[in-house]
Image (cartoon, rainbow, N blue to C red; front, side, top):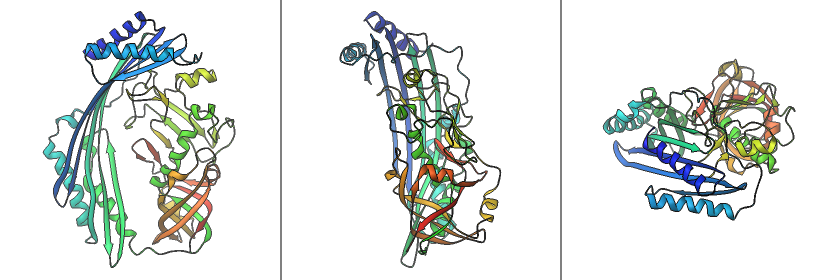
Length: 445
């Protein structure tokens, strides 16, 4: 037992002695490194560290919470006192409770010691390699707005009065690039991204080339006429749409009447080709952890299976309200009580390659970027976004297209999927393969 586990356990015991019927202490420590380069030189190098501790108490089913980043005895005593005082001001709720301990949390490989062992100089070289690859890809890449290496290392410790005492440490790293290609009077942007749990897996050259290729292929994009046609979302765009669905699949949103999926368990909500999964223990997943923000074991939760809604994501509170078990989806920092959130949230891949998916399209629109996704309504599912991408002719990507708008309803959109590719790609905690929509109205000129 390390000093933080001892500290957490002692504070839980003090909370019980101070009148809390149940108590929990959550400690997190973390440090982040960010290296940005431009024009062959380091433009910014940031090292940030943070640690903190949150105390959650239940007094007669009243919830109190307080947190601090000061670990001095006086500050910890004051934080505990404040948490209990805060409980006295809240309304009682019989669904407030802390989870019981599990026999054993699963072992996950979350910490690559090479991330710590690798020198700053090598990490700078990774960032420089991104920019070099982007500029060498095509002379029309004129500006590298952002070529960055980033890593994060963290430790979580949790103890509660029900008998939970657990901890884990993890780390991840990544590269990303945002570049501008110019030709005549046209300028187009492109990005590349890769995050991984292993630093040896990073490929900065691939990231730089990907950003450059995306920018160059959009040069001299033209408009198209308004029409109905098949629409294909590349994994990044599909993940954007999936991200709007994410809060609607939390039990918290359903219980508050703020979800388009409320009351639809057992009903078809997507195409039968769609399976949506959240897996907090996904091997290699950036959001994987042995337990969630309350100490509940994480795992695989199938939310949509063959298009049918199977259930919602829960923490201990929402599970108690619905009379079910938590799915291990409590997410938090030390500054907040646990909310319901996604971990590794994705659409499962299909069994055709991207080329086969495109092959059946005579005329269609391959969407690579959407603008205004934040305006989509997660309660009604309605959306209207700007889009750009590539025109499809006879199953092949041809000319770049911009100035297009697509609109509709998310439920109808995912019900209209008629092909799912096998190229599942994650963008940090969310992922999707390429998906094809049977037909949409594409608003052009």
